[in-house]
Image 1 (cartoon, rainbow, N blue to C red):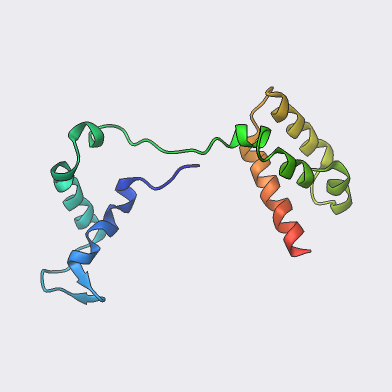
Image 2 (image 1 turned 60 degrees about the vertical axis):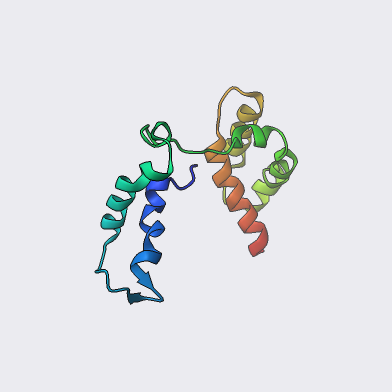
Length: 127
């Protein structure tokens, strides 16, 4: 999981200087690539080069530890074996084995478990 990088947001940064209320401001028509190029040339005016001349870095939430900690009770209720068997959409044995391995730290199943948890949460709301 990662957030938006400044490069992904750059096409929107200069939008206000190009268009005002959807009308051409008279300075010409610019594409997102033109705005990205303008960002690339002007970023040093505002930010120290050490911060922008490096590989992009994403941001991931500590989901694995959250599932073992503060979200554990919530996850346990959604991954309850009898509930999984009753609903019948997922293989309860496989899900519970993955959950057990994740909790013990033997494996990191955070992404797979998150998908199952989101499905279970949706299913609970849809019922």
